[in-house]
Length: 145
Image 1: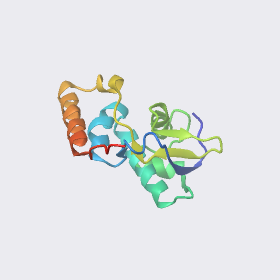
Image 2 (image 1 turned 180 degrees about the horizontal axis):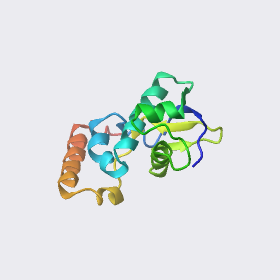
Image 3 (image 1 turned 90 degrees about the vertical axis):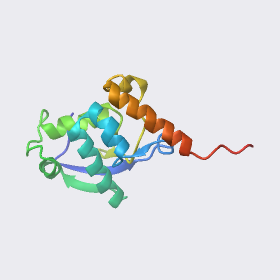
């Protein structure tokens, strides 16, 4: 993945995921997505989402500055940790590169899929099941039409 020296970050609005998703800075993402995407990608998602939320027209930042702020060094070449981190976000559908060159990040993250759940240790899978059940129990009952 080739990234420009300065990236523009926006929010990825998704009418399917947003209503059912969890905030990028939530405990759900930290507990259950972090083991899937890793700590660097989790922190990058949080940082990028916060910046994009604060600047709805797009937050511009030097890639080197983002990398240094996450403790990933100053490199920005194809194999640099920051490039691999952003690529990981894209691979897992948490960010996308738009045709205009902006990076759109999800402010709300979908619940894990079954494929991802299988990668969690048994204790985290059980905690995930409990969290999903608690959320479903707290949801308002559907109203008859």
